[in-house]
Length: 460
Image (cartoon, rainbow, N blue to C red; front, side):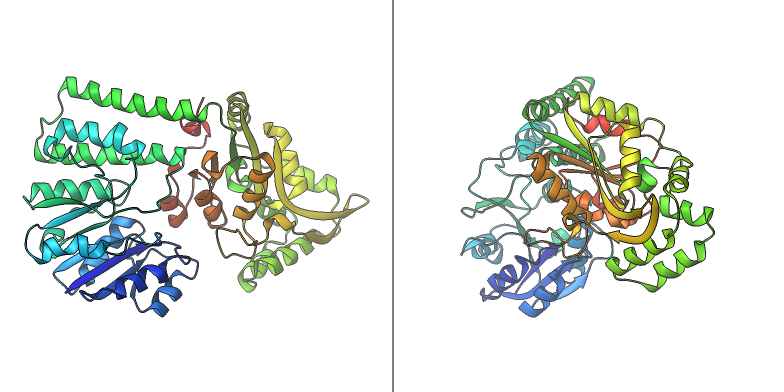
C-alpha cells in the first residue's frame, strides 16, 4: 500500500534501524533505499535489513528522491531521512492515514523543535512575500513528507537544500490538499553555521525561482530590496555568532596551494615518471603505495628536493589571503599526503600556522627512501569515514589540538583524497577540481586560479 523511500549517503550507523522501523508498519509494503554512492557500509546494512537498494543516477538528494519515486510500485509514498534514530513510534501512521482516507494529498511533518535559523530568517519571510498561503507552516523545510505518487510525479526535485521547499510550493501549485502533521520529538542535529550560509542561499533561490516561473513580474523593486534585507540579516546573524568563536581554515597543498604536484614534478625532473605511474596503477593499498613512492627519493639530497619545490609556482594570492584570514583570527594550516619538508617550506612561504604531512626520512640531508605515516592520519574509533588513512583523521587531530569545532572550520582541496576532509568541515571548498564527487560534496566551487573567493565565506 505504501512505499517508503530513504535517500542516504554514508548512514551506516542508523540505516538498519530506520529500515527495521518501517518494516514494523503493516501498511508499508515496499522500502527503497536510494544510495548516493556511499563509501561506508550503508548499502550492506540496508540490504541486510531487508530494503531494496538502488544507486542514484546522479549525486544529490533531489536526484535520489526522483530515482526512488520512479521505482516505487505503490500509489502512496513516504520520504524519510536515513540518519534519524529513533523515529516517533506512530509517525508513519500519522503521516499516511489522512492520505489513505483521502482527506489530503500531501503531508509535511513538523516535530518538537524550534524552527531553524534558515526557516525564520529566510524561508518564512520569502514565503510571506511570494507564497503567503504557505507562510503559516511551522517547518516548511522539513524533509519528512508523504503524499500521493501522482502529485510527486509532477514535482521539480531541486538537487540541493531547496528540494524540500520546492516540493511544498509545487504541491501548492498543483492545488494538492496539504496538511502539516505534528509527529512528536525528533533528535535532529542543527547544521554548522558555515553550512547554513549555503542552505539559506539555495532555499532562497528555490523560492524565487518558483515565484518567477509562475509570474515573470514576481519581484518588484521594493521586494528586491526586502530580499537584500533578508540576506543581510542572515549574514549578520552568522557573523555575530562566529566573530568570537575559534575558527580554522585548512588547505590542501598539491594542485591547490601549489600549481602542480610535488611528486609528479620530482618524477619528471629525475626521470622516474614511469616508475611512479607503475606504482600508482599496481598498488591500491594507500599505506603500501605511500611507502613504495618514498623509495623513489632514495639518495636524493635535500638541496635538490628544495629546488624541485621552488620550481613549482604558488597560487599568486595565497600569502595575501592567508594573512587576511589570520587577521580575521582564523588558524590557517596545510593538510597534505605529501611530505613534511615540502609542507613546512610552503607553510613558511604563505605564512600559515601549521602543516600536517607524511615524514620522509633523511640521513645527513640525503633521503633514505623510508617514510613514516604519522598516527594522526590513521582511522580511529571516532573517525567519520572507514578509510585506513585519511585527511579527515588529521583534521580531527588538529581541531582537537586547537579546541575548534568542525562546524567552525573551512577546508579546501582539489582531489578525491580531499573529499572526506571537505565533508568533515563545516564549509567545504573544491578548488579547480576535476573530481565530480568532490564538486558535489563541496559548498563552494572555485574555478579561477586564486583564493580570494573564500574570503567572502570567512566571517570577519
